[in-house]
Length: 147
Ligand SMILES: [Zn+2]
Image 1 (tube, rainbow, N blue to C red):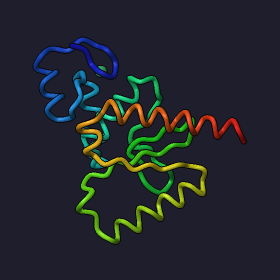
Image 2 (tube, helix red, strand yellow):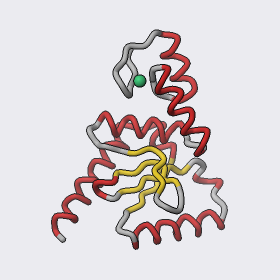
Image 3 (cartoon, rainbow, N blue to C red):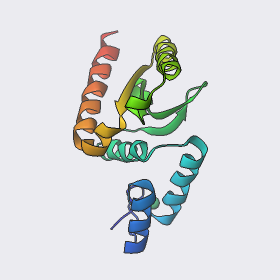
Image 4 (cartoon, rainbow, N blue to C red):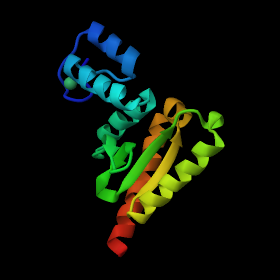
């Protein structure tokens, strides 16, 4: 068993406690680091899982990236892609809905693409979610080249 971040080997206790609290297996140091991020930003377990899955897929994601106005769950700066994870798709209020759209508009004006992923997609289809994001990234790269 190794830390998903630094590959340091970890014991079964560390494995289970990090899996239980964060949904990924991390060493003590990285568990603390990520827990701090969660505490500061109320980051969802799904965001952490997706962050590490993208890292594993060779993407260079940033967790809780500050865009100057708000913290973005995951950002891939090379292609200016922001990924927001929707925690409770059905519980969204109308104020939240329009504010999300306004946020997306502002990001778009700054050259960023924002995609929103329901947390259930990550929970049940992590592999497929990553594949789709990889597709979006290569699409964005192609667009950048075209300009
Ligand atoms: Zn580590």
